[in-house]
Image (cartoon, rainbow, N blue to C red; front, side):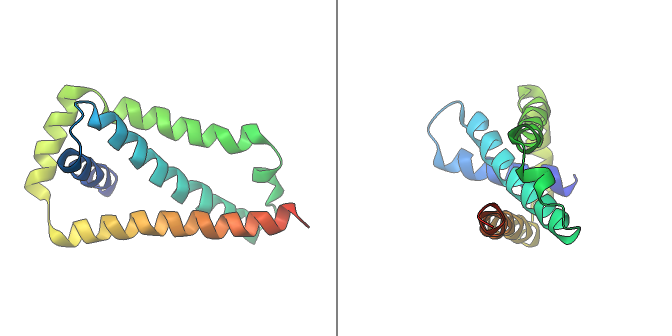
Length: 128
């Protein structure tokens, strides 16, 4: 199981423990997509800053929203088919370890930090 699937199923298992809703998997997929989007947009923004081309991402809403929507759609296609989800969740339970769980929590926190830092940088770009 690769780290992307492991990251998803860590969030999925947290939602499974905390939720009483039978559609918790949709919320878990949305939360996972949010983390992935934060990491992707924040990283892309910093790379564009290095090349002094930040306007490429910030000047058009379509260029900003397209990768976000694509990540949501791809994650829904990958993770929401119930049979595949249950099979992969069983594999996740076999491979689960504390070190991997700590790594996925670190990646989740890092994604939020990256998007906040990029948001601060984008705020200064838009106001200059």
